[in-house]
Length: 234
Ligand code: ATP
Image 1 (cartoon, helix red, strand yellow):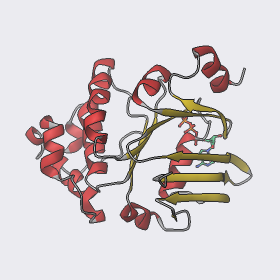
Image 2 (tube, helix red, strand yellow; image 1 turned 90 degrees about the horizontal axis):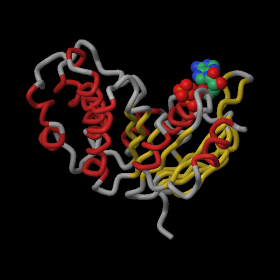
Image 3 (tube, rainbow, N blue to C red; image 1 turned 180 degrees about the vertical axis):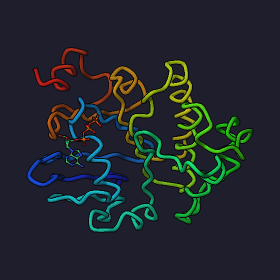
């Protein structure tokens, strides 16, 4: 079997005495999309932050292509090839669309993604490239956040709640673009509140409940009732 791009083993993360992630293990392979689902507070964002080095694991390991990254500072994790599209987008307010995108390239990683390629996928961003990023619509801002992450030519793309605050038609458009974004064999993890959409967009899923994995499998393998029980714990 080929090495997974991301391998998390027995991950534990706490905030003080409160354990947010408990004994979580998962893998994501090249070209694979994993959906991470679970109710508010289940620990999904904390898991993402641990992979990016923004919070430290109390136990367990996180490996990228077989090398441990959980001991590295966040900046080194980016240069190793991990990019996140954060919840709420977190664009640089004083910078233009293009400047926001260029910041993503600071990791200096070679690869297929460039300004030209981002503009090919999201033509509206080229039209707006000199505007302040925050003057764009919510959907366009989300495109900037995705483009900025891609500009680092990642091996692993973590996307936290792409749909947050967007109109259904825009969400549909963004998800429709995902296959062309992920087509180069990127490994991706998506956090998505809409379970139906998460399942449709992914190959496998992991459901978290109160910090632990409550169910995992192939997307589409379980009934709505089974997933709902794993999601809400009833
Ligand atoms: P959401 O969908 O609301 O973002 P989530 O599944 O991403 O939820 P986390 O944000 O990872 O969940 O939260 C997991 C647990 O850790 C929750 O109990 C939350 O209250 C707690 N937590 C998260 N961030 C912090 C923090 N900075 N300090 C203390 N506790 C935190």
